[in-house]
Amino acid sequence: MPLKDPEERRAYKRRYSKTPKEKERLRRYNQRPEVKEKVNQRVRDRRQWWQGYRERRKERGRITERRKYRETRIALREQVLALFGSACPRCGYSADHRALQIDHVNGDGARERQEGGYSLSWYRGVLRSVQAGEQRYQVLCCNCNWLKRYEDGTTGHDQKPISRTGLPGGQLQLPDGS
Ligand SMILES: [Zn+2]
Image (cartoon, rainbow, N blue to C red; front, side, top):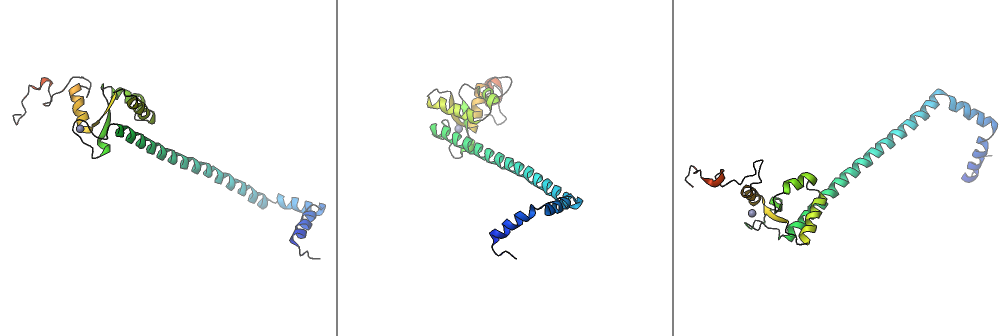
C-alpha cells in the first residue's frame, strides 16, 4: 500500500529504518570501504572549506581595518590642519594638503615621531594640544619646514644652523655672485 501523504510516508520510513533487518543492512552498507571513504572525504572537504572560510574572514577583516585606520588618520589630519587655517603661515601655501606638514615648534618632532610615528594617537595628541592652546605645534608647507630645519640646525647629526649657501655663516660666495 503506497502512502500518498508525505508526512505519513516519512513516518513509515522512520519506523522501517528502525527494524532490526533494516538496521543490520545499513550497518553492513556503511562498513563498505567505498562508502566509508565517501563519508571521510565529505568530512575532509567540509573541514577544508571552514579552514578557508576562517582565512577569508580574517583577510576581509584586515582589509577593513586598514581602510578604517587610513580614513580615520586622514580625517584627524584634516581636523588638525583646519585648526591652523589649512595654510602655511610663512608663505601662504594652501593648494595641496599633502604638502602641508604638522611641525613641532621646538624642533623635536623627529624624536616624537620615532616614538609613535604618525599614528592615530599622535594626531589625537596634537589635536588635544592645539585645542588646549599650547602652541607646541604649527603647520608649515614642506619648503618652509625644510628651511626652518636649516635655520634651527635640526636637519642632521651636526645640529648646526645652515645658511643659504650651505655653509655656517654664509661666507662662501655662490658662483653667480649672490
Ligand atoms: Zn610655506
